[in-house]
Amino acid sequence: MNTVKLANKNNVKMVAHRGVSGIEPENTNAAFIAAGNRSYFGVETDVRRTADGQFILLHDDHTERMGIDKLYPEQTTYETLRALRLRDKNGVRSRADLRLCSMEEYIETCKRYEKRCVLELKGGYTEEWLGEMIERIKNIGWLENVIFISFSLDNLIKLRSLLPDQQMQYLTGAFDENVFDAMKKYNLSLDIYIGGLHEEDVKRIHDAGLEVNVWTVDRLEDAERMVSWGVDYITSNIIE
Image (cartoon, rainbow, N blue to C red; front, side, top):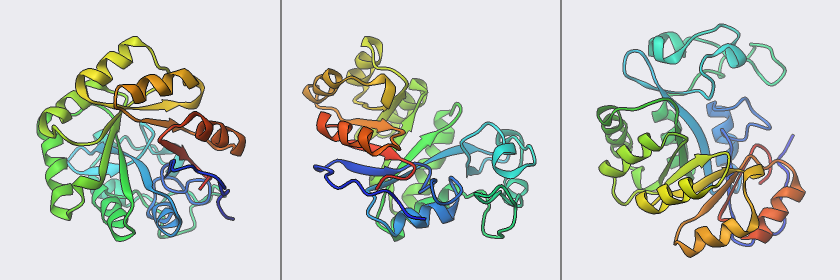
């Protein structure tokens, strides 16, 4: 298996959605390394805080889809989560390397391959928790290469108070005036579902000095259309 190549990117930055999740199980180090060995600009993932204050990568509220056993990260210790073996793409738990990743492993992998991190905050975060996360990323020496994203405006507002100049994107399914007002007020770019974006929105956002990331774009014709609209980033499971 391999990625689908977008011939004319026109300076659009490609982001691997949960790593190259069209090839390897999402949010695993295998998926991140697959992205690292390709031409992607960035690698997106989802981070949650465990019951004992660690940071682990999982999109869903619980592990059942990825690991058969149903564990809730926010209610489970880090070591218990790390012991869980995940399904391969064929649905079988056969590979010892498929485990939930720590945030630090992901950051280290992105740093090793010189990829930008696109880090989605799942759930609600206190300023203290965000401060802990920032310090851990700083210690790895890669904070300036992290774009924080979240559906929670509250998370982004707290982050903005801690990191006045950091790149951040407001995740949403649709673009409206409330979203645009928040973007301008807190200096947030947009990370939007492809079905919620219109061509005229891209110009308005660019005129405000902000950027547009569109997800999840897995059809080549859709990616080509987004390039023609002038978006800044395309997030995909399989298109490179």
